[in-house]
Image 1 (cartoon, rainbow, N blue to C red):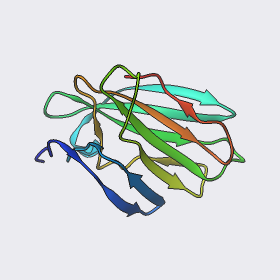
Image 2 (image 1 turned 135 degrees about the vertical axis):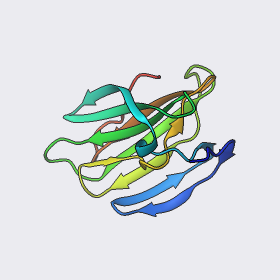
Image 3 (image 1 turned 180 degrees about the horizontal axis):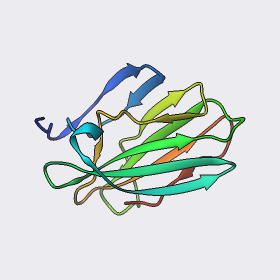
Length: 136
């Protein structure tokens, strides 16, 4: 699959909710093209946010975010933050929402995590405080 280079904007609906994306580093890799590498997790109020890292054919790491809410949670949101200065500021928030207690960023749109980019996954559910993973 050919890798898309540069910064692009993406906006489309997904079956479990909607995605609202601002500009960021996007690509043509999906989880089926890459091998699972590692993950980072952050938790709070019974919710867990997971940053999954995937190693893709170009030898670079790419990331996706997942939120799993507590048993009574609803209205899950997860997004990816992209920083080029070590997390001092960030852009490229790609929100994925769902009326259920869990959701994930699109599997066919992993976020590039090559130098100088650092990424983290953030999310919240039905009024719970936002939680974010560490930068990777």
